[in-house]
Image 1 (cartoon, rainbow, N blue to C red):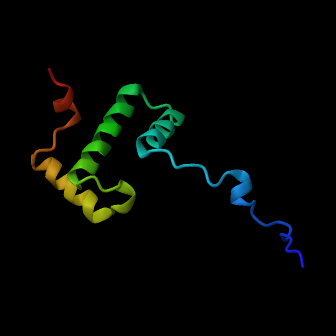
Image 2: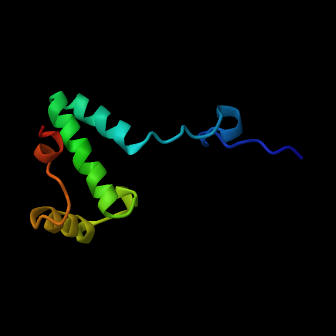
Length: 92
């Protein structure tokens, strides 16, 4: 008895090499910002804020964080709890 694939089924992962690896978040952010034609300085500022957000939450992926964590980060940033603003990070 032979087992054939029904038509319209998904391709065999072994034959296609499996799913494409997921790009790092910073690379996906850069691509999105460039598609949106943001300036280089804006891109760098957004990436820096994202890095600070991740560091503030102990390296947890932003994809796993939600509104509560965003609020905690923003409150800490506005209250001066050791989170530098982009201007502070680039000041001489």
